[in-house]
Image 1 (tube, helix red, strand yellow):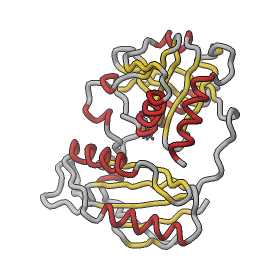
Image 2 (cartoon, protein in one colour; image 1 turned 180 degrees about the vertical axis):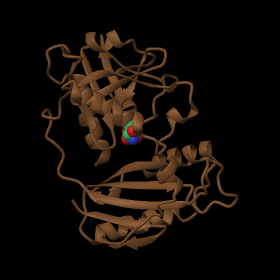
Image 3 (cartoon, helix red, strand yellow; image 1 turned 90 degrees about the vertical axis):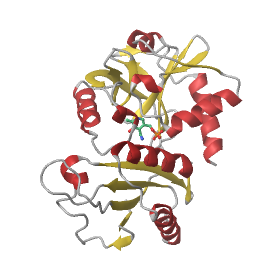
Length: 282
Ligand code: PMP
């Protein structure tokens, strides 16, 4: 894996030390991030990612440095020059160095890291299909932070570990009210009757950019869509279940909690969404 890294706009050599150990991103998770895809060197839905980053930063009361756009453009251009094609680009923005305690410094000097990792060719369809488990960790739909991609990701880390320990490949989290929320780092879709259903933002989800793209694809193909709260039992009874995320695109789920979903094969609506998404990303 090739990793190209910039800290506050400066290219970081592989052996160099980067961010301060006193950085609040490291000590408190006080920051936000975005992961986006470069397909053949072009960023997919960059504007949507920047909007989500800005919204999360505003919830945290963090200012987005004006250098963000140019820093990303420079990093993408360098990656292209260095022959990186398909890649993940991660932007991490923190409140920078802080004193002990929680109170932010009077004048924040944010830390901005742009890192590009080259990616292997995606797993061919339908070998992407996975198993999932509904875990005990919950999303808090009452917290404004659930809809932000903050650096505090340990709920998801522990959720994934719980699923893996139970022999499943990914975790599905419920919200505090017991409705289906999302995957550990993905959004959930089910096909119930002939309708594509995905939980709304009021169920504590991160509003995924792949989720929005899939909703666009489904609408353009005349697939019926409902954005509504889902009971966990509806997952088990669904015709199809799939997860969406920037890194894993459309991933069919063929077992939940050990129960086979329909025939146990990825279904036609999932395939249509994946095909439509592949066209969108070019
Ligand atoms: N939910 C969570 C918690 C995530 O971390 C991600 C990955 N960013 C998603 C959903 C999917 O969002 P996106 O499609 O924008 O990658």
